[in-house]
Each structure stands twice: as structure tokens, then as C-alpha cells.
Length: 49
Image (cartoon, rainbow, N blue to C red):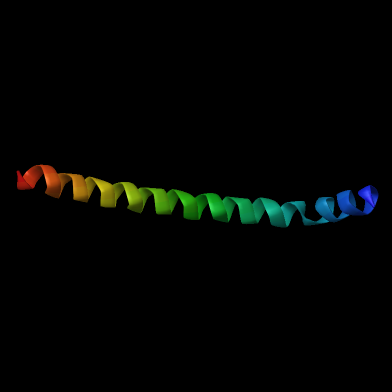
């Protein structure tokens, strides 16, 4: 079972790597827009005083 599992993992490693890179890319985009939103909110809150 372990051998079959590692064989599947080895076969799908390139796919996993691509998926991981895509996820990291989406995560960075999400983080960027999130921090931008927080900055805008913070600016409007501090600017409103």
C-alpha cells in the first residue's frame, strides 16, 4: 500500500507543484487585495476623525 501510495505521489508530483504554485499565486493575490482593503478601511477610519 505504501509503495502504491508513493508511486501515485511521484506520478502526480509535477501536478502538485503546479497546483501549489497556483494556490500560492492566488493566496498572494488574495493577501494583496485584503491588505489593500484593510488600508482603505484604516485610511477612511483615521481620516474620518
